[in-house]
Image 1 (cartoon, helix red, strand yellow):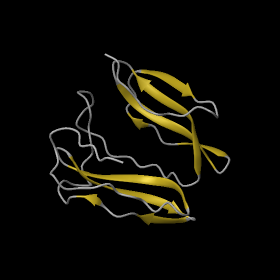
Image 2 (cartoon, rainbow, N blue to C red):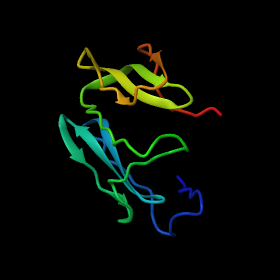
Image 3 (cartoon, rainbow, N blue to C red):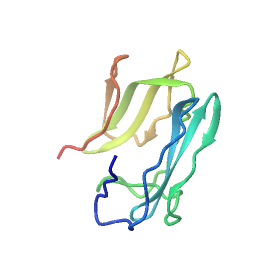
Image 4 (cartoon, rainbow, N blue to C red):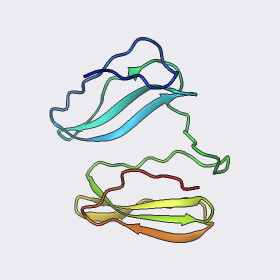
Length: 146
């Protein structure tokens, strides 16, 4: 397998990384160290029922505490949100409040056979919309249409 470098960022070092996936049932969280670019990543695994952080891959620049804001939308307020994904088998529904942009979002997910809602994250603006996902449907990406 060949290592492919994309973009003008990064140094000449680096290499491919292998993860020991024995006993890992899921990746629980991905931590990204960044500033203007991604400096490093680390993964939190559920390995045989115990949470375990993998090695940090990359440099020491940037910060793990900086929320990443994408696009011209959104105000200056808000906080990062974390979902405890342990035992979650699927996202069943996504609830949105939106007009010209997404004002708020919440998720209905299935954990250990029970359906649970996250809190609504965001404001009360815009109209209410729901996206229902069948058991064989998965959220793979979110795009912005102009």
